[in-house]
Image (cartoon, rainbow, N blue to C red; front, top):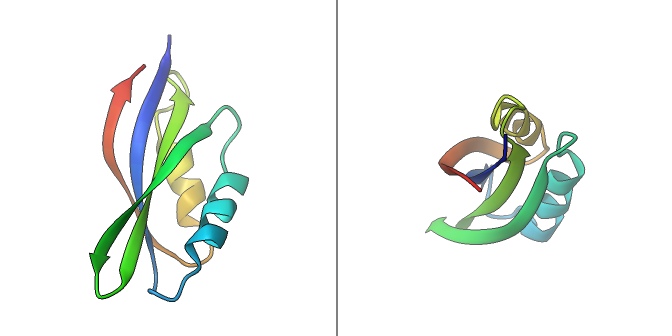
Length: 88
């Protein structure tokens, strides 16, 4: 089995959220075996910016569910959605 790369859209709950701090908190809650390869930012509307981390997880670890659950528990996160997934 290989690894899976997933781009996950993390929507903060307001435009006032410090995105650098939010990135740090997302990195801190990663489940064991998962790693973030990089972050992109996407201007959504009215000053709201979504974070788009690319997360690498082992193929046999239940996919991205553990990462999605961990991200959704982070303070200031409104929603978490997988944008796309591919094998490495």
